Image 1 (tube, protein in one colour):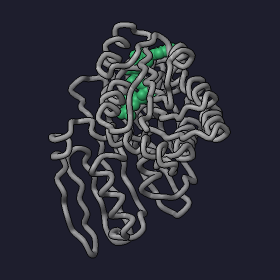
Image 2 (cartoon, rainbow, N blue to C red):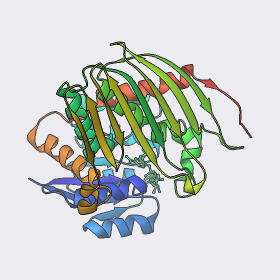
Image 3 (tube, helix red, strand yellow):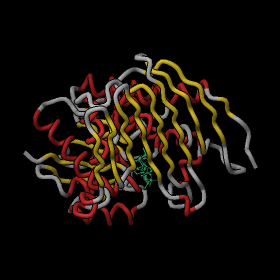
Length: 332
Ligand SMILES: NC(=O)c1ccc[n+]([C@@H]2O[C@H](COP(=O)([O-])OP(=O)(O)OC[C@H]3O[C@@H](n4cnc5c(N)ncnc54)[C@H](O)[C@@H]3O)[C@@H](O)[C@H]2O)c1
């Protein structure tokens, strides 16, 4: 069987999803929806799909659909995912699941009721360095994770959709757009529910209506603790940075995204340079792996590797930061 997929939203993320699905056996992109008609036509043309100018029209009129990828601005996530589920379509859902926990729960319930697969796009997990780190932890090479440092920075600017600066459309700033990946990584690697949050939240540029920096101190039910630093520099040379350090009772793992992953433990010391996979398979090879995992879950009937409950846990953790974080005024 070939899974016929509609891409809802052909922006930054949607384009990567199309490229990912194009490389997957047993999958075909049959519809691409975007309000930008030229973009929809261009992206549909890459895959022989039918272009649509609105996600609703795609769901109403596209023939032969089995699944959707929701890669729309955050305020549209819940409506699009729920409507797709009600029509019996499987859902690959961009992060965050919704802007609010209520929206996230609606999506999870709609998919559960309809009996369709719901998988959340924490696409960083499909990178070699993350897979290796998780494997080392599961093999017990660092003992129990007790103290983690997580940093994620990604420049904000005109290359991103303007909706991300509108709280009504985005639901939040850098934490919901970028920091969710770091929060997912912490919850995944520590593998324990979040217990408590202390946080400071900053707006760095005058006039910004969403937060641009967050520093949080997190504690987990198993006693582990972590710091989370999320920054969205507005200077273009800011670059993208993702660094994780996971100190366990018997060793430490350090991840430098797209560069290396290393372990220094009582029983294992190793540093692996990452880069070959991206050089051979493209910078966004993790989108292809994510698409493969989704298609496999649907066609095999097995559980999705990142199900809705993980998306809800991450969303809840982010909303805890917003609820408890001390929000300071603009710095300059
Ligand atoms: N996993 C990742 O690496 C990653 C990267 C970027 C964004 N994202 C996520 O992907 C989602 C989209 O973000 P983005 O950065 O791609 O945004 P974007 O603005 O680049 O793309 C969104 C697209 O949706 C289109 N759109 C808006 N309303 C629509 C409608 N009614 N019907 C059809 N299309 C419509 C817009 O025209 C736009 O092209 C968000 O959830 C975001 O958090 C994930």
